[in-house]
Image (tube, rainbow, N blue to C red; front, side, top):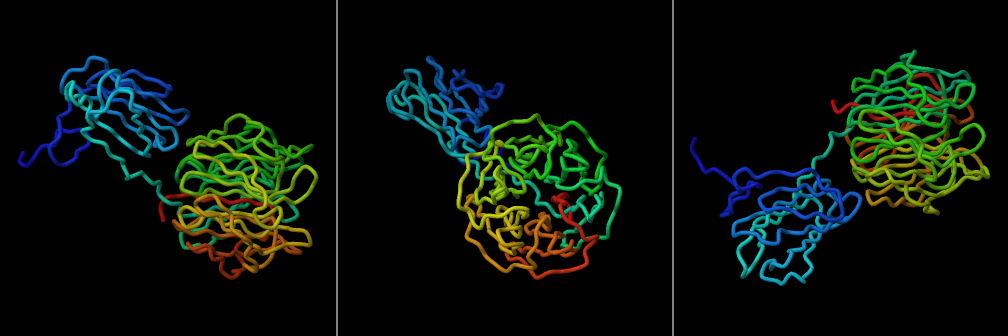
Length: 422
């Protein structure tokens, strides 16, 4: 074997200290404090709390400790180094040493009593893995006046295919979202009452059989991806009251138990992912049957934040879709006075922009989904009758003119992105 051999942990160029032979990596640290040992590596997960890392009290020259940002959360909850009586870069132990950069990794070596601990490597790993973008979409379920279990697949060019029937229990007012990078899930809805069931969609668009008993039975919930490969269903109507609860979905498509108290009770709202790993719920109808103009942001750990009011025209039975890789569009719906064609763009910072009017045929009870890596589409819905049309959304959030004749005309369906393959 020819060429230079890199012996440092980070593979950096230049003159660096070699990792001690037999360097041992310890279990992931989640506590708020940890005392570390020399010649050990530690993954420090600060998702839930900051962490104080106490270094060895009596290190030898050449001893090293490696600390890595396990969950890329040091920017939210930093680590603090306690050098335990020794200097840190020739500064006394009473100096505060914080590391608060997302994706950071530090390799510190003890140089002796004069300068103490010195970072050998002190870097932020900017290369954050990015999930493959969704390429295709699936629209399914709904009502024509009769409940249907029809699905229509859309390819990576935004072309919606012919109807395929028989994809689980026929129902309407259902929720849907992507999960697990390249799959999708439909859940809840209404048959002769609210139901508690889900149907998983694999990465080639096949909808699986019903799975029952997945949280409180309800209809008109909404769903969105979060955390890169997970999802949640939230809000809805349980047949007696509008509800404020959520159910988290893991990256295997398993729906968790109810969590209550996640914002103002309402249903008939819309939701979409944004910012790469977060989500937003917006609009809907509250307990007093009033249309509302509010949003609830969802963190990359599935925590639903408090209401933020005044985010565009109050309306319900609208739809939302991702676009541009990290943004979303909320559009259409029913406002005071009738159906509307309004859209509101959601930036990658979670801010919903002012109304933009006239973006295709005004309608309600439609569905939206991402496709083609960085685009989206809205399809189906109700004007004064059920309609079969779509409007594509480009990667800048511009909604195109109507395209008609895209499968069975219906309303109260839902849609989701799936497949990482074009």
